[in-house]
Length: 112
Length: 111
Image: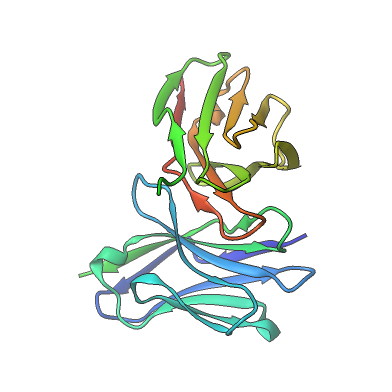
């Protein structure tokens, strides 16, 4: 069965600094991997997804994630944080035909 | 094109009551997923329906149930409500296991 671990329930970065949110997964088959973002009092919005094409995936709002099979990781990065990036971020894994499993989420705080 | 729509957006129920939440998927999507997002517990998978059938179920008691209708819309029913059922209930839809898209959720408060 697949699972997802997000390291750090809260991450704080200064405006303009690098954002790095960590995600490790386990899956018995080559997975689909996703990052979703949830702004306060809203549903989840897809940021980006990996489906076994390019290992570096570019998403919306300047975010990208790199699939590293050897490390079973799919960390999310953004070169320069903006105040509007403050939200909760969820990593998710799917083995294509089954349900999508989410990590517990990481709340990103942006410091002025 | 309309996204996933859920109703009601907010509701308050008393412990022991029953509640029904509704979800309309994106047009053309045949799968509907239900998740519970309780404070401090992250997103917990509840149910997955595809083509009218229940395909998978999370680790929730039987008082959580649902169904999917021929038009692919779905209901989530929770019987004998308990205080810890207070949460945001998110519905999502997809087509054949591809990317799932979420609705805005239904906020349930049990008092």
